[in-house]
Each structure stands twice: as C-alpha cells, then as structure tokens.
Length: 132
Image 1 (tube, one colour):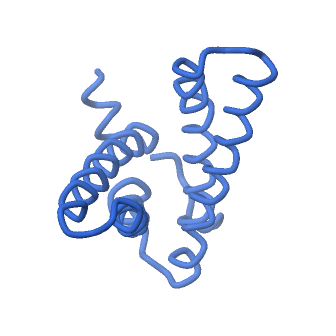
Image 2: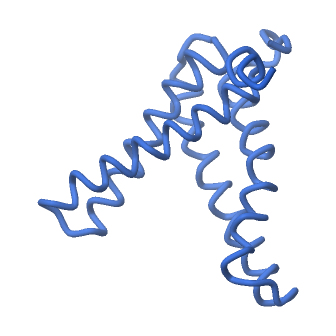
C-alpha cells in the first residue's frame, strides 16, 4: 500500500522526488565543498537541486512536457517555500516559544503540501490536470 502510494500517486511521487533531490543536493554540496568555499558550494548545489527537482517533477511526478514558462516559474516556488518556512519558523520559535529543534519539523509538515500545490500549478497547466 505504501509502495503504491509512493509510486503511483502524484503526492507520493512528489515526496520521493523531495527525498531524491535532498540527497542529490547534499551529495553535490559535499563533493563541491572539497574545492570551493562552503557558501559557493551550497549555492551551486541549491541551484542544481532546483533544476534537478524541476526535471523530476515535470517528467515523473506530474508527467507533463517541460515548457519555458514552467521552467522560469518553477524557481519561484522555492523562493515562496523558503519565505514561508522562514516566517513559520520565526512564529513558532519567537512567538509560540517552541523548540528551535522541533519547529523545523512542523514547518516541513506544513510546507510540503503548499509546495506540492504550487509546483503542480506551475508545472501543469490547468487545462491538462487530472488526478493521477
């Protein structure tokens, strides 16, 4: 049942891509960090992760053709996600006095469905949507 969800449903595939993308970006950061300053290595790995995520989300998660519109719009999903996460983290830690260690977990739980919806909106035009 879990395997079917992770491989056959869009949201499940989206979660798999998130894990793969995280592993890819971290591995690339680790590799680049041997020769580059850690900030530059992180920036390059982060940008490469956006491209990798776009490719996987377009071809496997949402099963649609890549377009220039979605290609240039997709990074905005990451900008929005980061901004949302930063605001939520601030509210949880500073206002609600939650643990700095636990708060990111809650932020991730909240942001994953939002990021999924935004990615789907950007990658797949409204006219071609069907729940896969």
